[in-house]
Image (tube, rainbow, N blue to C red; front, side, top):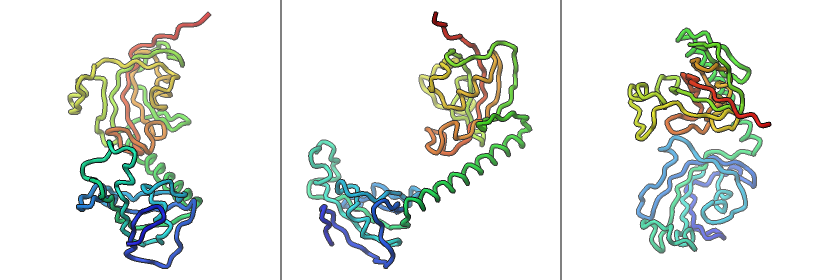
Length: 278
């Protein structure tokens, strides 16, 4: 095996003649991370998505920036990083499967090399395609359930199912809210109502089943909720269809997958106006 100036060992299994990545390029690669005894710690292929990184000057062995510039697209390589170097200065973090003198190994397959502009254009196109698919799925849900929704400029859709003529809240007010949250496939992921939670088989140990308190305008809830609650009168009920851009975006949260449109059945139980300062 060859050794880089930083101290990594590597062996290129396939050496293609293509262009190799340069500083600021974005690389897409698959990898298998293993111990010396071939125990797999992570496999990006099994996880279903490759990794990406932007080529930068190497800051240490673990970033492999001393190896990536050696690989053309479709090259495969084995990289071995001395565990002693990784855990130097913080031995307490060394797991038992990396004893002294051992190596952290990576089997890498370089899938793609792009300029930063090419990578950004590809990402933006993928996001736009995902957004269009999300809008289509939400509209299909509305049509299949016969909902006559109102849409706001942000993309929020709603239907008031139980209106009242009581006051609406304003930013700064504290509201008490009962709710049940679902995905478009009908799966309930959260509820403040015990009967709904139990019917959905939710395991929420220690959860108090009561209206939650929200101070509007403080950003403590998702943007879709901030907008939705201002549309309701005290005592009213509504169903809201909240696009992912107003919810958890491409990150997701817990049982909510990335890019998910969310459905909320909401009751605005009470509005406690903010105390006015003199």
